[in-house]
Image (cartoon, rainbow, N blue to C red; front, side):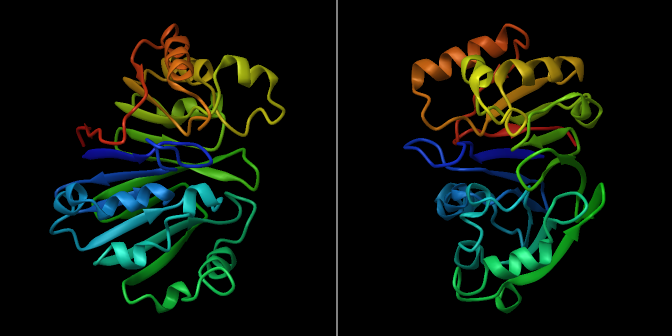
Length: 258
């Protein structure tokens, strides 16, 4: 299973980082966790080559905030094969998935309802804790966030964003080889921020991953205002508790044994 973090910024894209999107590929299947502006990278020759021969793209959305869905409608042009969509709905989140995606892909926000996309392969509205799709078995965890969000795990990889990873995540991510976790804040920002619990922070993620016996922790959904020095400080703070933490580059590839 090959993991490509093609969108790792929080809220808005930066010069080097797009907003939330992770591509996962096996020999026969491909999956996206979220569809932020990182979707644009699917137009790159590198990813066209990687995805050559894949006919179906499974798209799992953690929630429908725009930094996680800004690139969703781009798939109409960027993906030549069939698209199957998975959207959380009540009771996992606080919104109706079907109603929301119909609004999002219709006027006045977009001109072609998803049911009329030529490459549309169907929608699954997730209201349970596990879904099978192709070669992937995807586990789901409900999370605290504005409107609700969900985290995903497939095999030994977990994607946790737009929530503060906590004790409720420990069993969910236990023994993962790689966790990509929302790290919007460093310690200074987390301590003064009003909406604690909406997003994660480096030391909090480190403690949870250590408790869960995670092998590697990638810090994603990082505050886009952090410069290089602030990112280094964030990473160094995190490594005081979890030495195998890193900040992924959007050119990186990780292999996880199935």
